[in-house]
Length: 255
Image 1 (cartoon, rainbow, N blue to C red):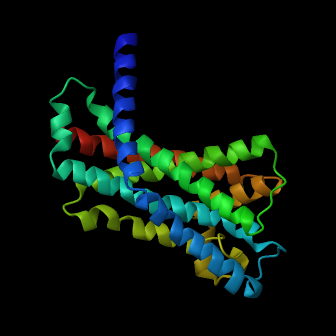
Image 2: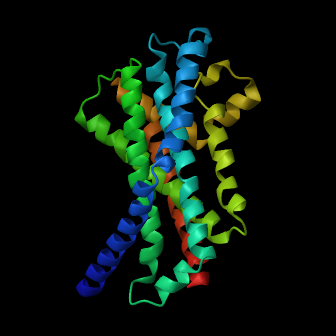
């Protein structure tokens, strides 16, 4: 049992290294994922920030959680793209013919998504600091924020795996991320939901992005988190487990 576990971890490490080498050889993936969220942050802070009533003197503090979620939603589309290419080129079948754990190939892509998105988040936080972002949070709240972001990344990455394994074209593999990118705009990421029309507000307050944004915002500002963190965790874990089951089923069909 222990030998099989060590074998799986070793194979997964090899697959992770393979995918990360592809990213580091072509850094345009991380650069592209960073550009749009940073551009949005600059636009909303320096162009729209003065006109938005967000009950805060530092709009970048209010904005940052939503920008981080947009960056992650953008980044996981590349996971679907890379998985689709491996499937289309027969690389997955080739790995299956070798003496390696079958699921290690898929887990390699998933962990690559987590690592690359962590890099992206760090870059965006550094830019936000240069723009005036400040946090009074201690180590534990920051660790809690990191945990929520990793869970959110894992949840969306497993959704991306379903798209990458099921798509019939490159466009189909990455198109699924468009609705995910749109969700933060109908949430409390940019403006308080109080300012929204009733129907839009009802949707905004009951979709996953709002609870995740509110939990991260409270943690970074040193405010009481309330029930938002439990709702955020429930959304992340629920989506992750459901997507994992569907992704593994789609992967086993190709095994």
